[in-house]
Every structure is written in structure tokens, then in C-alpha cells.
Length: 477
Ligand code: PHE
Image (tube, rainbow, N blue to C red; front, side, top):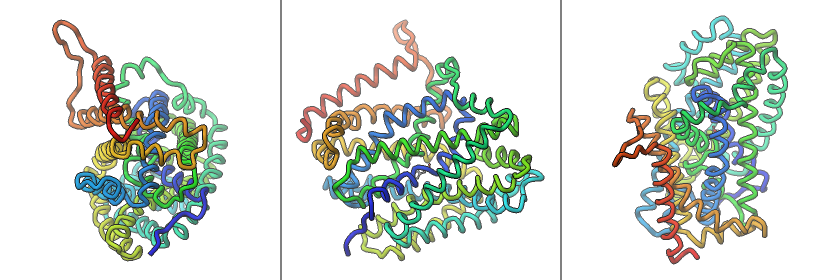
């Protein structure tokens, strides 16, 4: 059986943007931003998207297109190594973890679309969320969301994913722009925009090392990096397009929608609720729902808003389900319908655990996901830099054109050396933060080393050492 491929270049870009734009932009971004200082967080996050996100995206694209396989098949076929093949299986786990909690939030959203139509949460938005967020009904809505996701994936790459995202993405952008235009004209919206757009540099400096891992995790999450999604999508590509151009377009569009979502959410919160709310996964549901409740056309605005979020969530969840589906199809020759059905069975159980237990949900949705994505992306980057080496540059240059081709080798150094060093640092500090270990300044031989200095010195040394190593590796230069 021949492997599937995208119908058009635009189809691939829209599917990848569809994967990127999702609850990460519309739900997790406002949540993380409100908990981590607003504009200061946005600034760090944008920096990571540019310096880590785009090169990371290219690493996944290069591996995916060159191998034409799912993450496990890609790493094993391009390296002939058992260790890389074993590592590839991490991505199957990541997909399961991701979709398990994502589908629960997707279920909340579906419920809120209905509840906006009827105005069910208007009387008591906080109480409503508390009553429906976890429990049997939440598990039911999770199953509904999972079912819709599966119906799209079942139809395949062209007829399912590509045709669905081709309709969803334009709809999302048009509706969000309309909501943003309306939102910024509200009385008191200015305060929300200030919170989002004008950074407090003193606070940024003081909290930089707390913000950094969260911003890095969020940047990876929103670009769907480190899970193998982008790799899998690129594996359905022909050879004729510029990965650099496509990757840049995807990152720019995703960032645009992310900031646009902020421009919708924060002015509405500040104008109608008077604050950003107390954060947490319910920020969007409680804060925005109370805003909608106080509006003359609240039911309509609420329905449109949650409808947009539902579309965005679906265009991402299909990309999560596609990872293990392509794994079973490529590696075990299972048919697409059988693979999809079997996986739905697995997710039905794992997602229900998240829907029933808030403790599991919280841990999975923040810390575990960040760690898995960071670790996963480090793996892809090292693979591109050290295993593929020169071949990665050759793959990057295919269809790249003269201008983008110039960046091939610098990209490989960034991907193979500097970015992994940075990500390992954020991984360690994220883990330390999660375990409650504080990384304070240390005094050695009478000199006080601040975190910043230690970080910079260690990073430069490690980067330099690996840079020299990479230069000597047979595969490069
Ligand atoms: N990028 C998606 C979002 O922002 C989430 C996602 C992460 C999708 C990893 C696939 C893989 O909602």
C-alpha cells in the first residue's frame, strides 16, 4: 500500500498551523501568562519561539520528510540503532499523555458551547465550572470530543485531516479577529492590553529564571514541538518545498493567533471582570464566562468564542492522534480504521482518569507535558545534528532556494549544539521547580556565583565542547 501524502502545499501548512493553534494559544497561554506576570512572560515566550521554536520545527521537518515515517520508524530507519528506536517509543507515550488531558479540556469546551447557547453558566460561572470540570459528566464530554477527533483521523490524511483543517483555520482566524475588534472597543479594555503588551522589566529580571522554563514549555507546546506531530506531518510531504519557508510561515501564523487570542481574552477580562482572575486551568472558563454573563449579547458572543476554541482544539487533537495511528500503520501494517479504533479504546480510559482526578490532571497538563516535550525535542535536535549531520543539511536544502540554503549549516549548529544546551537547562530547572528544589546562588572560594553567571558559563563551555565535537564528526564539515 502506498503511503498517504498531502494534496497541496497549502494543505500541509494549514494542517500544521491547525496542530499548532489550539488550546495552547486560547486556554493554556492566558493561564500561563496570568500566572507568570503578563507582558514579561510574553516577551520571553516570543524569544523562545523565534530562537528555539523555528529551528526545532525544522529539525522535526527534516527528520520526517527524509524518513517518510512516524517518529519510531524515522529514528530507527535513519540510524540503524536500537537505542534511537527505543527512544522513538517515548513519542507514543507523549501522544497518549497529551491527548488524555487535552481531550478532557476539549470536552469542557464542547460543553461550554452548549452552555453558552442556553446561558446555563450565566447565573454562577464559578460554581458552574466547579460542578462540571471533573467527574463522570466530564468523562462523558471527553469521550464525545475524542469521538469527533477519531472520525476525522479515520478518514485519512487528505480526506480527513487536510480537508477539515482547510475549513477550520480560516474560520478560526476570521472569528477571532472579529472578537478582538469587538473586545478592544470595550470600556476598560486598555488595562488588559497593558497587562499583555507592556512588560515590567524589573519584575522580568527578578523572576527570569522562574519564567524561563515555563515560557520554554509553553513555546514548545504551542508549536506542537517535541511530540513528533510535526515530524509525522512532514513525513507526508513531497520533496519539492522549502521547509524553512513553511516552518517560518507556520511559526508566524501560530504566534499571530496566540497574541490575537491574548488580545481577545485580556481586554474582555479586565473590562468586564476587572482582573485576570486567579489563574489556574479554570481561568478562561470562569473569567470569560462571567464576562459573557454580563453582556447584552452574551449568549451569542460566548457561543462564538467557545465555538472557535472547539475548532482550534479539534485541529490540534487530530494531530496528536495521528502520531500513534501512523506508528501502528507504518510499523505493524495495521489498517487506519483498526488503529484508530484501538487507540480510541486506550484514550477513553487514560482520558477518563484525567477527567475524574483533578490531581492527575494538573500534574499531567503542566509539569509532565512540559518535561516530555522538552526532552523529546532535545532528542530530535541531537538526532538531526549528530546522527544525520550533513544529511540533515542536504535535506534542509532540498527545495530551499538560494537564500534559505545559506542558513543550513548555521541551523545545524544551533540545532545540534546551542539549543539542546538551552533546553537541557530549562528541563533541569523545570524539574527542580516541580520538585521544590530551589537553585539558589552559591558561594565558592569567596566568590558568589549567581544563577545567571553559572548558567552562562556552563552553557558556553558545554556548547563550545560540543561544537568542537560536531566539527570533528565525520558527517559534518
Ligand atoms: N499546539 C497545540 C496547542 O497549542 C498542542 C499540541 C502539542 C499539539 C503537541 C500536538 C502536539 O494546543
